[in-house]
Amino acid sequence: GDSVTQMEGPVTLSEEACLTINCTYTATGYPSLFWYVQYPGEGLQLLLKATKADDKGSNKGFEATYRKETTSFHLEKGSVQVSDSAVYFCARLNTGFQKLVFGTGTRLLVSP
Amino acid sequence: SQTIHQWPATLVQPVGSPLSLECTVEGTSNPNLYWYRQAAGRGLQLLFYSVGIGQISSEVPQNLSASRPQDRQFILSSKKLLLSDSGFYLCAWRSNRRSYEQYFGPGTRLTVT
Image (cartoon, rainbow over all chains, first blue to last red; front, side, top):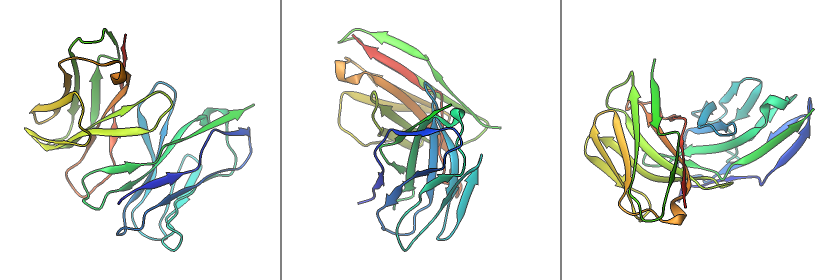
């Protein structure tokens, strides 16, 4: 069935370090892919998305490229800030187009 | 612009008491609506979704129910809460047009004691 697998956290980085959070999805169809961010005590916010192979989503310095050949959608940022500390969720659209299937989330902790 | 509201923001209820959480969306019509639960330190679990008034799809059998009495109102209910119902409840909406991203409300933190 439809599923998304994310790397286990927490990911602990120093400010200005490079970030990669891995995400892979089951290759049923050609789903739209998303990254959401959840700051402490808040709901989820859409960070970026990609709707077809080789699309690159980007926002706030974060990027992710839709890789059909590896069924991956890894989140990257060249230089993280303390304010990026949050939980990041990867998601794919299910094959019925009605709902999103989320990964388990990866907590990012950035220290000054 | 569209906004989504949830209330209450926090709730502490005893085991066996009833529950009603409300979600409303403004600035759009005929949205898809979703209820999620997030247990402490865990991922998201989809509980219910609705594609129209009175249309509810249940994802996980449990002692919760959902209703959609109006186009932009989605209610999560329980007749008798369990300790395991504690968590962070999130409502989300999605346009019914070809745009698949969901937009989330601020959430309700429920503690069952």
